[in-house]
Length: 338
Image 1 (cartoon, rainbow, N blue to C red):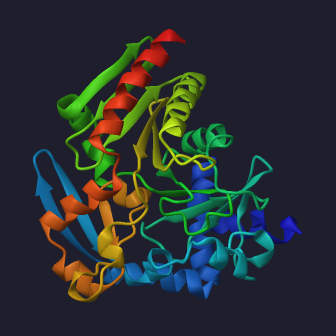
Image 2 (image 1 turned 180 degrees about the vertical axis):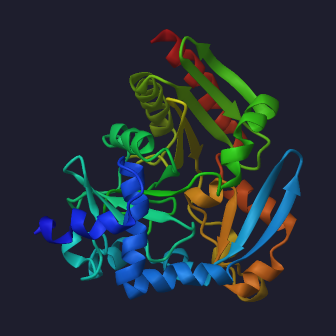
């Protein structure tokens, strides 16, 4: 029963320093680290994480050596492998010690025991539903608002870094951990092309940031949803039929305003992932990577990766210039006409 996986107020209260959902989420992590050895070990391992920084014109890319992420980076996500394993996000398969917070009766807030962030959460649906954003985007925005005091929310498409493409989920991590959180305003003002600048809605397209993105900003949730629906329908036209358009999405909420960044993708993994010998780099870009923090679980890759390879990795996985130009033109025309 789902009730068996919910943390009680009695267990949470000793760690609680506020009353809203973001405070309860922060307290959940403290409680889980205290009682769940795997969780504690995962966060203790962050003490050994190393970071390199590559500077570009007006922005930075961080590379993090994080051996604990090998499970995710090397995950087999082909249909056969997915069918043969138990889903680790289904509540009846969670470790005994793992507890969560129920959200809107349909989602759990769970601590991620293999963290990238100092505070890292997985937000799965309580049902075993496929990883699709189209019908769940509204809840994604709600999570962003309700956890926005401390966290950025992100979504990895089923072919864009989701290690559980068969189970609908989002993730949350500390604000300003990813470079894009602090670079966004400057990047949009210097590299962005405004597509829509209307009353309480701004839609921008950014190139020249190594990875191309579309951003949607508004205080009005339904304007965000409407603009995203238009974007989604355009991406469907240039995607493989019958599959969700490839994308990673980040949502940052502050001062009663959403800022949603969508990274359209052209491929899941770069050629380096499949190369042999010295050419191999085990790096599988997902939302955090697109946000400017590349995760390398192997020390050899962390030490050898070059600035030129970082550029090439993003070039391979981001949308092509031809399709991005089509996307910008279509998005401006269709949002303006609606």
